[in-house]
Length: 333
Image (cartoon, rainbow, N blue to C red):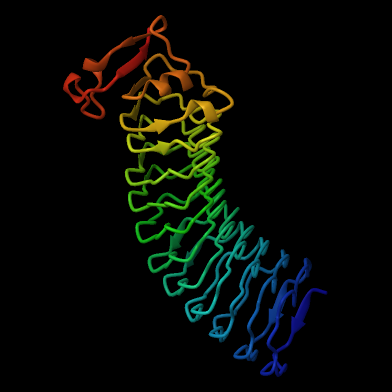
């Protein structure tokens, strides 16, 4: 089926539109111009898999009663634009995978979205590989519990403003920003995330990132940071001075392939090496300096006085000096 015209449908009594066009992979034209969605409560998977649709007008949809939009436009891989400016999302609790796989989508303005009731945002924009403009300026994330892979693979985004994000209830951020190859700076200083337990590959492959602010991250409940910064090849300095990693169990390859990394500040960072099964398996660059007050970090990095020297007076990135009571600053010789 290539074309469907439902402009004469009376859908005023319909309350469930789940899976309505799911898997219509050859559908190229869809007319829903007179759809009345005022009674609809769920639109999960509604257009999922409509991979030949190049345009879709749902701007007139009444969505005030809709509580589920997960997977709604998942794998609509040829859609290049969407107008959702009239969507009322005040009742929506789930938007996971909503735009996942929309790999031709170039810009998306969701500044009108009310997300105060949303619990799940995992994979929301996953694989939107051509998206270069994304407006989330009014997102309320105070109820969100998972953001895993939320922006994974959005490799054309050059900027992303998440300063309004409330992450107090978020438990998982695995792969959240994985593969951001054009983003060069990211300010997550507002991320408190006291419920966070998983950060695996969170920034993996952010190959153009040279500035990252994690100054207020609460990592006291985090158990995994595996490959968290791996392949951030332009990252020069990493300030983890306030990280509490006492519950951390997995830290493998956390800075693998960070070939330009010169400074890691672990000044007040805490760790329990007894919980961790393996050391940080990284090939350290000769210019890398690691500063900490906690000698347990030297165990995790497998540092020894035979291979490294105390170079505290040479560290400038974090204004560290010998009066700050840093245990040691190691630099490979």
